Image (cartoon, rainbow, N blue to C red):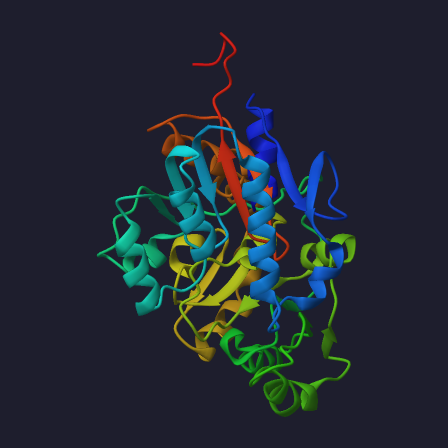
Length: 345
């Protein structure tokens, strides 16, 4: 998301410097070792993150920014506030808002401009003072949407009870459609047990599992699907995989929870459901969806340009111009500095 943000800000004429992990492409100052990726999700992750943040703020020392935009989490936000490197700090809240997180954000709300990624997420913590609500963007396909597709359904998500793959299997079976499940199995906690008990026994020629899907293969599987299916069992604050489907012209079937009512336009980009029966009914109505219109509407709503414009509106309460710092675990910091060119407002 931050890659798309800084790329679009450059297109809009802003100066952007990117700090990231070793192996990053395209004009990136690399401050995190590529080998650190093996520590993500384990006990060493916190130390790697702290080391990375130390390097970032050492690189920023002696410089002055109008705004720092932080995506890293609590540690990065505190460093941004306490560093004194910018007169304004913007922070995007990613993930579910638990009570300890709400307490933290209320504590720092007067020192940073907090942004939610959906109305649903914002509504879960009405006591937090927000500077804005900005939907995430996805990379838009370069090819125009096509109308040709196959009959299968696809769910692109981690294999975990929260994502409801067992329900996707039920829907596909009842709708007489093939199902493709694409996503890694969570090897810790209940993820592995869930896969072994509720997913693996049903794998067959009509229920296929792809553990590692990315790039062209992922795009092809999504664009050829009759629909994406997301029977989520939690209030997900934003569904990137759902949006990836819709911008390809592939409609989405999803349970009404979390952000799904604000992401999906009923009958245009998909169908919302209350239960499995409704999902089956939606699967039987997919031919009602105009796939070209689905893609057109989604590409307008979730384009990088639209996201960048929304963030610039937040920045301009203080200033504009951006530097982006990409952390080793996919989170980022963006430090903003004003371009002094006469043509810049």
